[in-house]
Length: 192
Length: 192
DNA sequence: CCAACTTTGTACCATATGGTACATGTACCA
DNA sequence: TGGTACATGTACCATATGGTACAAAGTTGG
Image 1 (cartoon, rainbow over the protein chains, first blue to last red):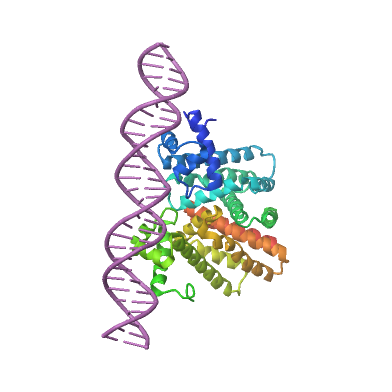
Image 2: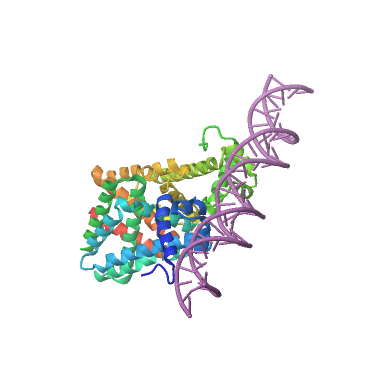
């Protein structure tokens, strides 16, 4: 699947490197020139390919979202398991330190989106629903009525994101794993 | 309690207005001059009182944290109730739309802190522990052993923050309330 | 080989920024 | 009264930024 319809290879390569760069440096206080240097190009080229600085940011954020949804879809495809186990797997994947830079980026952009920064419009609209809808379906498979399924899905999403915030701030994997297990246990007990 | 030892009235007034301004406009793409205009002063004055732009940001973020902890302490002082009810009250207070600007700011700063921005150092260090420690105590009052109490407190904090993220993005108070109630219900059931 | 098009490089511009040197004002205390 | 410390205003600076005009180089298709 192409990043977008009609994107030149050069542009796609730049976008790729831009996402990687931004995951490490954030996109809060990065200038076109700094980014261009780090990407081995010139700010002139970023302007050329993406139209403007905002254009670069929009592209990066959208690409980032696209990748997230891809992962989400992959995780849901394997549906021969219980929601508990699915949640545990999801947490195990997301709490992997290798993904921390991307998750820091995610929350940085989340914060910017809440402040209404332009390049995050689409991101903000999808930030809950794109996860909530499939998660609700999973909960409904357990026979829960729609509204309760939705509430439980929402709760699960909140727990994952809340614990990720904790983990990224404290680095305390053990403590956060304990909390996630406590959640799963309470769910299991209240499902029965 | 003074904001800090030895802060002039003028400075304290500026800080107060700065916090209010930043809660509305964020502090991601704000310049000294913009802020100064909005505060009815000049960027010269902000530099004078706070030393530098970073100095302003540090002061704002610390003041913001101070107020949060104050609220937290007030909430904990009234301890003649169950953790469930305490959690519900906390949620009800935090989910009040009047506080949304401050909460948006909180998450914006959280995102910046995760990216290692200078003015957020203290904030990041305290962002989990300053809530986790008292919350753990509350859970321990219920007779839970330390580690489980800590896990449950951590979980509660994650739920609150995760649902706040959801609420700020979607504005769906009803949906988020449902999720919080689902959480409280599952806790109650697994406590018994 | 040429022509049209895409991609890069160079050089520049207007602007906004954070910071500061210097002067002026203001309040309070001796 | 004078003086001393704090507060504010004015004006300026060096720098970095986003953007772009213009030209050169590369690429592709006829």
